[in-house]
Length: 252
Length: 233
Image (cartoon, rainbow over all chains, first blue to last red; front, side):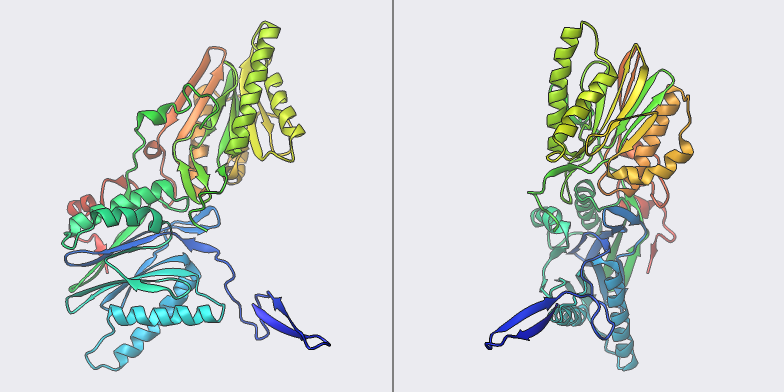
């Protein structure tokens, strides 16, 4: 928002706020998101880091796009998952593409690790926030370099941290309690997938913008693998679900 | 913006009522949301008023429940005083009366469906504001936006009971696929001269539409069954 200072005759300064989205030089700002992705969940496991997200792009309450890839690999050592505005995520991928390109052009045997990419993203998000023009995303950055596992998060206002397990959006409320109770340092790949799927199922039941189409991505010292899209079986067989308003007509 | 637990419970919904040769079929999804959180994933939005009249509720869960309670109460008295089952028209008009006279305070869309011996199967729409419209079929709730084109093409006069039920289940399932506010199971209630039949079509027994995939127990099953190239880089 731009502030126009209006000086009064008696010297007092009044400040008006101009709320226009298109400023003088013709650029635009994200005031609110349009096409959005929902939760991303991630955790460290024995061999590396594993991320999961559904493939939905919601347009308000409409489930408009159902094959959106919200987890992408960055260079050789990192995975990036994003929730929030998809166009801003695509812009971030362009920035990172350029970053990795310049890194490769040095041709010096070094390559940016997940910690460096996380730091870069933090600075990008925070600086945009300071200009009141945020990239409307919550990002999960995971990776492995030289055997060291890394998992971090950056929000749209620049809040950033590292942890053994992270989640964005609804995942914060629904998935993290499960992860806090059941995560261990030495989870095998199979155990990690099962744990993530437990979280994904809860999110599918309870998050309005979740769809039944997921991708799970893992990164180890060997490299990155992103699974093909798949769906999970849901359970509706509770006896109470058959006739819930029995004895209480008009209830839910 | 995400978990607003003090947001009013709203039946962002898909509700449908369809007449067929001999009665009516009412259908609905089962999702009740509080903001973006799914408060109840298996709600029953098709509510009984009398033995022969049921309603589909959409909009505010509280408003539609309270109004249906009042109408059930009035209809019960009416049945006693009349000495025979009340007609669908009377039930629908009672819903309309309460909706219209409290229009500033209520936010709900109702589809009234039932069978009586005078007019057979009937469907009445009572949307926001308290309009009453008798229709051969009616759709309502947020998910109905996605069904106008579908019904324009798929609706036919004089369907059989099975055709009507299949149409309703297909329609609700299509709306669930696209409306974030609709989901869960499909419930149907069929009302005719023989009485009332309730059905339940659970999430994983509904057909798969465009870009929807066959469900599995886990990614691990897929990885172990198809070895050659399950993953991409």
